[in-house]
Length: 455
Image 1 (spheres, rainbow, N blue to C red):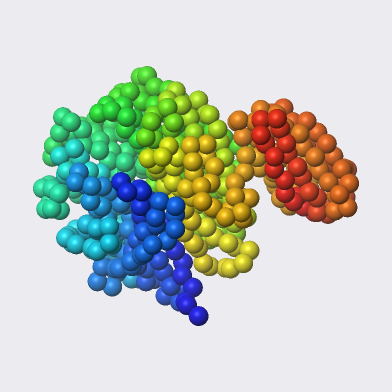
Image 2 (cartoon, rainbow, N blue to C red; image 1 turned 90 degrees about the vertical axis):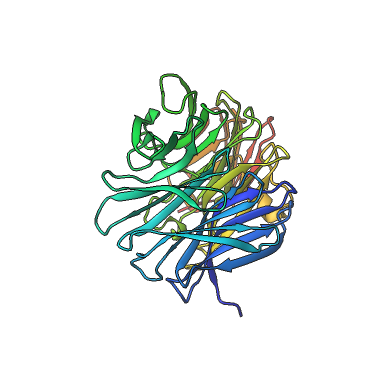
């Protein structure tokens, strides 16, 4: 019997032939501090084709990001650190990989041995150079970051260790004027650096957005931003900003549910091929704990589509039967999107997480999936489940009203109520404890049912 593995998805890309590559790490459960980088290849239907695992000289290794070079090769950014609980002696491993999963051209950047390296991120410039960041911290100290630029052979052209202020950089970009742009997640600021990586400008990100920022540039100066609106029930907040650092004019919208936490996809939760069909992704009912991937509570992938003015066209949720945490959403050539994340089936195992990939069409419906997976795609959520005094119901934006029907175990209709709000609270104090069947229906196409348990 094979050894159970704890797998984690970090990034996903689609190649020009439709092939899908999913990157992350894999760890055997009997070896808690020995993880290997994992790269999986799927065909355009999401069917498994091949995979490889590797590490850097016995270190714990994770593929942090997949990048496409200007000649359409795939670049692996792999984070490594010593195979111990302390996780020091780390750095960044750079490789190219071909479509047969052959790895070549290895270069390493080793960080200060006293630092525990926790993140590595990068971007490819128009000239083919890599703009990279490695972030880590000393025990009990603030985070600090390396900024690095390499050519397309991974030769380091310049680097700088920024250790005078707290920093952890994500969503990096080299601007056309030879300045560099990045988001500092520790200060929730846009920052601009000159050609020698001196910080020359900074600006607080508007709307109190924080953490797990996603960015998609639409031109050399304007971009779409996704973040956690932490001061408002942890909503998903999204912005269309016209200039790299000037926040005077922008469009803004948000998606939220009450009584729970929502978080953007960990790596990047915003993308488009056509900016009038913008895909936004995150985790609904996100467990805000040190280890969210092994938390025994139901959660969902939430997937939105907006127009270019950020008006939400539709929303769909996937999951609820396990703990789901989204890592990345990307728009695909066929007008749909791909979603990658991690699933923890806490009802049937205590430690193992699995990688999950969804392929959705332009309407957010699952493509080439089995009946069980299709049943987990929701346009309404009924919670808490189990519950007691009330049922909370969240309707997707494309369904402005719906009829709720609740049946007892004998099939008798015990409650019927028309819903006219996105979120409704239905009193169930009068119902005895037991298992009920709910049905939600609407002329707009909503037709969902499931079990609800009253304690």
